[in-house]
Image (cartoon, rainbow, N blue to C red; front, side, top):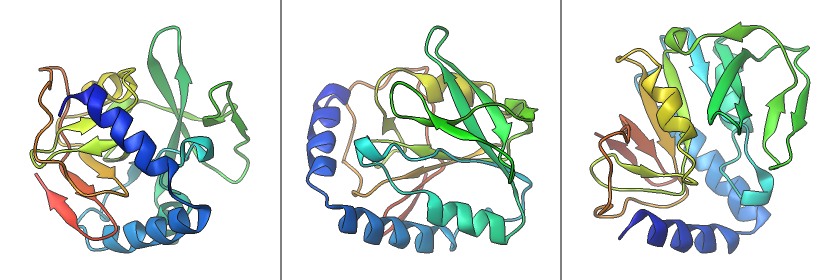
Length: 187
């Protein structure tokens, strides 16, 4: 299937999930993540879920990171440039939803992309080769291109892998792992 077809399919599937489903599936994803060999790094980037889009609730992953005393980074998106700026999440970080309902830090201590060791990536769908489909704006491809080559890229998805995304671009950056409630995919 193409990215456009997959976007349509998985937006509909996510839309059918209840808040209870999202919570249960998000906990299962966090429990699967604990099995990964990625917890000995310092800087972890995570997205804050857009509730209106029924994204994976990352509160449980945040709890794991906090419990392991990791440096947690969250981003602010610039829709004019298609880029993201990353800020250290602290007790004093103020989070506010932007006009796309994306929870973002108002300000804070900025950290450059090349310091980030692990990135948790929101997505709509992914395939068995590690390709992913997001909302189509390219924010994460631009962001990941500025990370160091060894940065670990982990997708999180409520749904299992598609066989193949047919219209992958050379600029698309593949995942190293994708975690679902049922399985850990390694690429």
